[in-house]
Length: 127
Image (cartoon, rainbow, N blue to C red; front, side, top):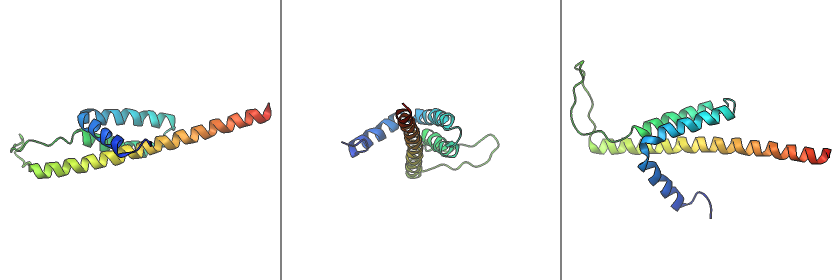
């Protein structure tokens, strides 16, 4: 059975929702590690993933009430429907960003594995 099947994706989505407040920090740490390992080659991907994950973490639906800031400027209050739509967009963006970071990490690991295999073959032919 493959790693990416419907059951696993459903479990991943449930896990993300239960730990929504942690997603931004985790993706940022993982991105930092990936950037260090890749010598900065993945910075643009990890930055996008980190930004989307932070938005996702902060995407809890706001309460339906009117607030007036100290400076008196108007505040846009979202309806519950708008908040759900905003949350769905944030969830989708975070999922795409996390997938992009995972793809970048997979690519990096594949390149590293290929280099290790090349070195093993070179040692075999030398010895």
